[in-house]
Amino acid sequence: MLDFRLFVFYTVAKKLSFTKAAAELYITQPAVTRHIHELEQQFGMALFERTGKQIRLTTAGEVALRHAEIIHANYRQLEYELNSLKGRHSGTLRLGASSTVAQYVLPPVLARFHERHAEITISLLSGNTEQIEQALLNRDIDMGIVEGRTHLHELRYTPFVPDEIVLVSRAEHPLAKQDEVSVEELKGFPFLLRERGSGTLEVIEHALRKVEVKLTDLTIEMYLGSTESIKSYLFHSNCLAFISIYAIENELKAGTFRVVDVQDLEISRPFYTIQRQGDTEPLADTFLRFARRYYNQG
Image (cartoon, rainbow, N blue to C red; front, side, top):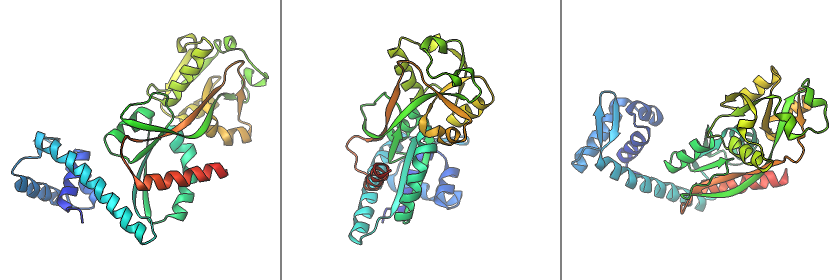
């Protein structure tokens, strides 16, 4: 079994907080302190520097964390392979997904996956594409699913499912009654956009450049941090917004939103799964195979 003191150190080092580590491990903060102290005595070196209520890793702590990450990954691999010999999957799968994917794409497949593999505990971290990429690089998650176009060389990107981004307005908007509008007509209306760092915004910018439109050519009323906030604002305004088709299925069925077709403008993209180069995560691969079958059948 993984040395619990090392696991406590690993958790504190990732959280940089004794309090948060104690909560995650379901032990008391004094117990966390004791385990860290014992480990520091064993190594004969301080692993953390403490300044008031804040802590940070010492040079020795950084070395210990690098090895603890490898040991932790090897232990999870061991646990997976031994459980596989018994014909079962168990363990913890830490997923991260950009906001659109986390809110609209993953929940149905996660529900079906849990029905099939109830022994696997799943956590889902949501954020914009940059945040999910960073979480993967920090080993806070095992796999991410994102929507951006920029690829980091430390990560492996694989197309997951296709998506279409459409121009949306509320049903009463003047453009909602037209079969098709020109790009020039768009410049006369206010827009809502996702925040910088959002994969959706990155894809929209790229598509607009193809029809010789820059974001600065549009009237941007507001940048908002989530698709849901954009949808809510859109419902109460005369704005336009580019939104994933996954995010407005219910509103289109209810007739509260309309898709505005724009001449010569088509915005499609794949969502990507991302994993660290060279890493093998069996539970992530198990989920990915299940998810691909789910969407292919759908």
